[in-house]
Image 1 (cartoon, protein in one colour):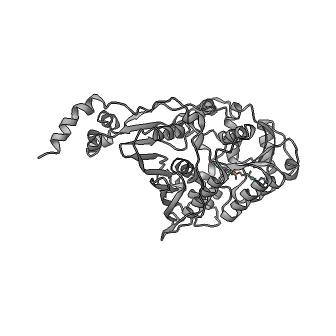
Image 2 (tube, protein in one colour; image 1 turned 180 degrees about the vertical axis):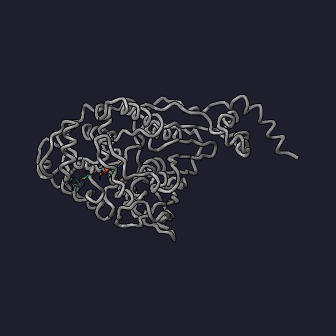
Image 3 (tube, helix red, strand yellow; image 1 turned 90 degrees about the vertical axis):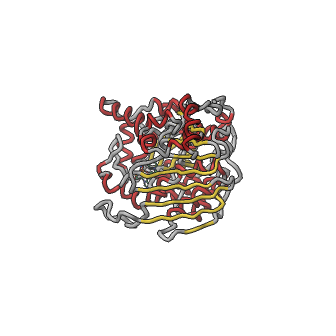
Length: 437
Ligand SMILES: NC(=O)c1ccc[n+]([C@@H]2O[C@H](COP(=O)([O-])OP(=O)(O)OC[C@H]3O[C@@H](n4cnc5c(N)ncnc54)[C@H](O)[C@@H]3O)[C@@H](O)[C@H]2O)c1
């Protein structure tokens, strides 16, 4: 499948890290209105640079346009690509105006083209494992989700100095202007909606807590840096999703079922640790004890947090395991290894890979238009809920997003029948006794 990139900024280098694992995708070339950026990218990666967007769009070899432009350019670039007869993969959000997003999906449908996009973490190993475990009944009937996307206090992180490996500055002003919700909530909404269906009703709150985050003038200057969405899903599950640029980093997921809990450590890591706890009276009671709660090694003996489960491997799991970044220096290799091990690892090309695979096999797209439109509506509603809060019933919905066939068919066993450990069994009598007169 032949693709071309529009926009070669900060995130472009992240897409490139796993490009080696996609021999089926050929890059015809790139275009950026910032010609200095496209020249740098061309120098580093050897890509052809189109002189303008028209030249890229009139290249008959290009089947998919990948829109990695700044959010304010998403609508225009995607529209022009669809009008030129190209399929489009867009970075999130598709647009920040639900009417425009609807218009783009209608345009794609009218032309028989695919419009889909990020985030693609729904397809990663950690989320696939969590989804399969829940579907297999590992925690009983799922009832409650807490999903966190606190991304550190932005005003203390010196974001102005952050650069990609080829020197693209981190677009901190755009991130702060668009806000933590538009930038991040999709990473949770995508798996929440896929697993539990469309949202039936939502109560949300958003607020601006830290007024001064940078000396750079922002427009607008007061985009919320905190949002909380409480969502009720058609499948009966309730969820609370929090995004902030204020609280210390926490990207965790907890899905609580009637008989257990599944936890994913980091929604930004495709191979994050997944823990499954089958509730017992001992593990639930042990949490009351300060020492067991705060000393994980001790707590684990009593079943707190359960056990780490082996991840399902998918068709491109190897991509993040052996990222090949731009820098080959010792420093680059150490930083890249540390980041993958400890901080985050995302295969951004996985979404394009799944999109291209579905086109080639004439299958429906794994993320259908109705689904993406729903995500777009929820994202914008959470962001705009305001400090007095807002309750809404979405105007959009979707039928069903089945787990990918290779995930459903995976023979992976998520320890559903795991027996409680020796200590848990031994202490169950003690716990019973302690709860009686
Ligand atoms: N920064 C991140 O870590 C990150 C992570 C995931 C997703 N994203 C998403 O990726 C997209 C791009 O983010 P980024 O961080 O690379 O931003 P960026 O500002 O670093 O890069 C955007 C690039 O698009 C170019 N551009 C803007 N309008 C254009 C147009 N009309 N035609 C051609 N080029 C145009 C700009 O010149 C710039 O080089 C956004 O949608 C963002 O939400 C960013």
